[in-house]
Every structure is written in C-alpha cells, then in structure tokens.
Length: 220
Image 1 (cartoon, rainbow, N blue to C red):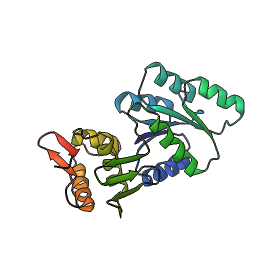
Image 2 (cartoon, one colour):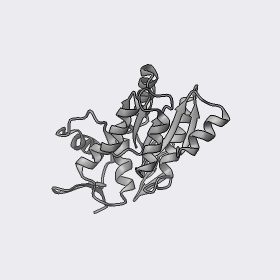
Image 3 (cartoon, rainbow, N blue to C red):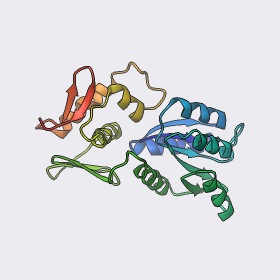
Image 4 (tube, rainbow, N blue to C red):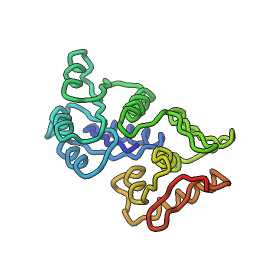
C-alpha cells in the first residue's frame, strides 16, 4: 500500500510515517494542502491520511478536489476535531473514514487496511498462491505450513505480486507502489528485494522474471 500523509505537525507526521513504514507501507509526507494536491496529481496513492486544519489550502478543500477529480484513492481524515458534527461534515465532503486525535496507532493501521480492502483492486485479507499463504492482516507469510520471515519491503512486493494474480508487474510499477517519492528511479532496489524474496520463499521457485517486462508469480 502506498500512503500519502498530509500533516502540518512535523513530529506527528514523522511518528505516523515511521509507524506505517514498519507495517510495510510506502509513505510520502507533506505538510500543507497545496503540496498534497501536487503529490496526488503526480503519484498513484492507495490512501491519503489527511489532517483537516492545514495551512494554505484547507484539508476540506483538499478532500473536495480529490473527490471531484475522481482520483482512485481512499481518504482517511485524521484530525483533532472529533465531535460528531465534525465527523459528519468530514464524511460529507467525501472522506472514506474519519479518526480523531489522539488515536491508538493500531487502530489507524487497521482502518487503512480496511480502506485498502474496499478499493476496486482489493482481494480477501488472506492471499494464497500454490502452497504460499499471506495473511495481510497479521503480516504473516507461510509456505507449506512453514512460516517465513520477510522484511517490510519484501512483504510489500510479495503482496503486490499476489494481488496481480499472475500478471506481470514491471520494476517501475513495484518501485512506484512499494517505495516512496524520494527513491532514485534508477535504483536496483527492486531487483535486490526480488532476489532475497526468491531465496526466502524457497524451491520450487514462485517468483519469475519476464525478460524486459517485470516479475510475476508462477509454478512453472
């Protein structure tokens, strides 16, 4: 999952960023509404964690524009305005969910994953391929009953491959969905993560390379 965090309190933004990264999410952070609108116009985000009280372009206006432009991302408003009327107003603007500060971090993660499952490309929370099982809620991977420990990036890449249902995903697509905007587009990070993922998943090989096209899951 690729997430845009829009939060003007820099300490809070950093805490959210680091926590979501530990959950195998790719995270970009901006601190004002104008920067948020610029990012969503360039990058394909799955979810936007949006503070309402932003400098410059208000969070409500950011939400309106995202909805009006028909962008394929879910919006979770995260704000100190937690009264019932505030929640009703936020959801009325087109937000998909609303979480008031202060909040418990596990709840934020659970809500983001729930929003992702509701997206058009979502699958069931437990993904399977051959003898491989990935519980996306608990972030646990096993093959033939043997648990496999993966890094957050390996988990992110594996989830994308599983959701592709055998389709070929280019290195550029994986880089866009599993890494953040600061990643060098010429990096070999995708190739390295795929290499270690293959080794950890074991034989027979499940992750294959389509020459000059990308990577896919297969049993051949």
